[in-house]
Structure formats: C-alpha cells, structure tokens
Image 1 (cartoon, rainbow, N blue to C red):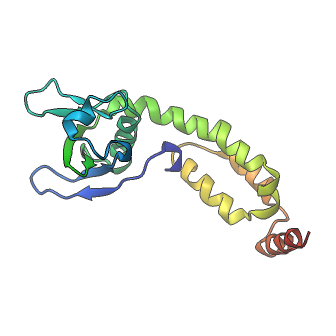
Image 2 (image 1 turned 90 degrees about the vertical axis):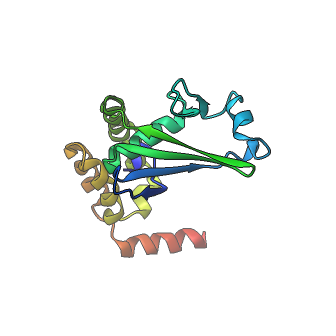
Image 3 (image 1 turned 45 degrees about the vertical axis):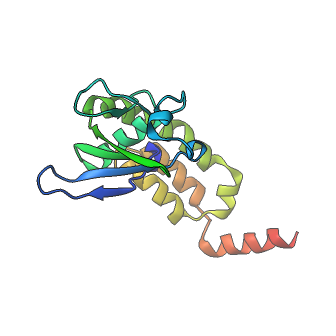
Length: 178
C-alpha cells in the first residue's frame, strides 16, 4: 500500500505472544550518542516512558509512530518491535496497535492518494506518452483494494487508449535522437 507511506522491515515470530512487525531505525546524526543522550535530543523518536515496565517509548506524535501504526494495520499484527540502533548501544521498544489511529489516518491517506496524487500522476504528459496501461493498472490496483475507483479507472482507460508497449519504445527512441 504505497499510499500509506510505510514498509515493514521484518516480522518477528513468537509462539507465545504472536507475530510482530519489526521496524529498524539508525539515526546517523546521533551515531556518537548513547540511547540515554539520544532520547534527550529534540528530534529523537523516543521519549522516557511513564510506565515502570519499560524505560523508553516511541513518541506518539513522531512520524515513525504513524509508520509503525500503518505497518500494524497492513500486517494485522497487534504489536511491533521498534529498534533504534546506535553504534554504542541499541534500544528496542514495543509499540501496541491503536486501531482508532488507523481508522482515522488510513481513509485520509487513501482519499489524498485518490483525489490528489493519482490524478496528478495520470495527468502528466510524460505518463500519457511513455507508460503503458499495465503499469498504470498496477498503481490503481492497490487503491482499488481499499475503495471503489471507477473515476480513476475511466481516466486510466482514456489515457491508455492508443498507448501500447511498442509505441512507448518508439517514442522513447525518438526522444533520445532529438
């Protein structure tokens, strides 16, 4: 789901607590710091935890929090291991799925993708000239899995008419000569 802005780094299998997502971060600009010093930085994705069970937690307002919540939505996992690797030491925090978070954010992102990003991509001259219907169909397929996409499919069909892989190659060769 390209429109959710996330990809899963890995999955952790556990027979007692279930499968979990794995997300790794290596904050290069903080490579000389310990985790304790990193947490004190304003751009840190971690903060001190209020819980007595764990020392740190992923900041709920940080962009990585959104990424992890979307990973949990995509995989159906109930929790994720979020790893911050620094050469001096590493830290792993558990992030629990918040269904209410995805219920709000996913429809907003899908709507933005459908009504703003995809029409922009489909309307560009370069796409009209050089991309065949099969490639555009792959883009639309992901959005169609979530919502009904008849308007986008109509636009795709109109753009793809007369564009085949052979005309794409011919047009590409012509543009290289000029």
